[in-house]
Amino acid sequence: MQDFSLQGRIELGARLTGGKPGVLRWVGDASSCSIAFATENEDRTETFSGQRLQSARMRTATTVNLSLVLRYASAENLRLGLFANANNVAGASVTNEPLPAGLVAGDRVVLAKPAGVTSLVIKDSAGSPVTVDADDYVLENAAGGVIRFVDVSGYTQPFTADYTHEAFVRLPMFSAQPPERYFYLHGVDTVSGEKVRAALYRVQFNPISELPLLNDTFGEITLEGTALYDAEASLDAALGGFGFMDLEE
Image 1 (cartoon, helix red, strand yellow):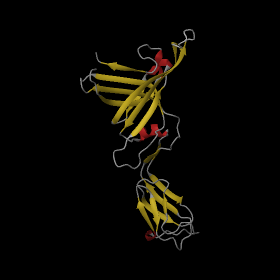
Image 2: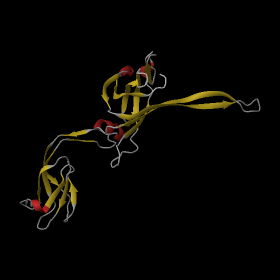
Image 3: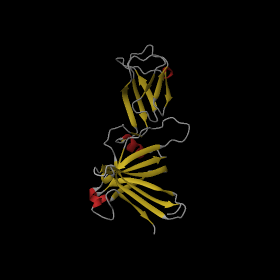
Image 4: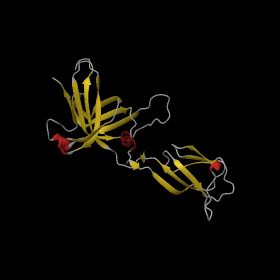
């Protein structure tokens, strides 16, 4: 490749035995992707010339690191950076969800399953529960499940809530072990049209260092990880222990 500039699709998936990929998933549009190679060395200088000249070098470590900037904040992409087990919550009805005690007019509370809330009914905790008048509270944000209380006088607290909600995916942060994925790029040199393929067999990702929640421009997710040595794949000379790169002749 002369004067090259690459684009391509990046897939992540499970690693099977022998360094082979399992089911792959396209991560979506990515603004950049790069692999960094480094070695650590121990140097020795001789002691007989009077000049302490370097006489030997021993490689003590070899590292391969991946940096991937994604434009799609999908649940699967966020799982990698949040070390999360995805909890797929089906749409359902909730009955008698307790709300915080001691509420006063103007207080806001959020429901436990705050996704597309509808059919909201609030009751108090009197012996024969009283349904709170619809004028005494406001569902300020159905998508966020936020309720604002207008008037709480004459009711016995704590309140409870009945409602329905839509399906959503919850990603509890650091609920999973550091994720490990097979990395595969199938791309093209946009200058020459040559096809390019690259793979890393065992990429273990770090948690994302920063997640943009409010920003004035397009958001991106930066994933960084280390390619671990694959002893099984290394038995095949055509694969090597870390990964490969294919070029057209």
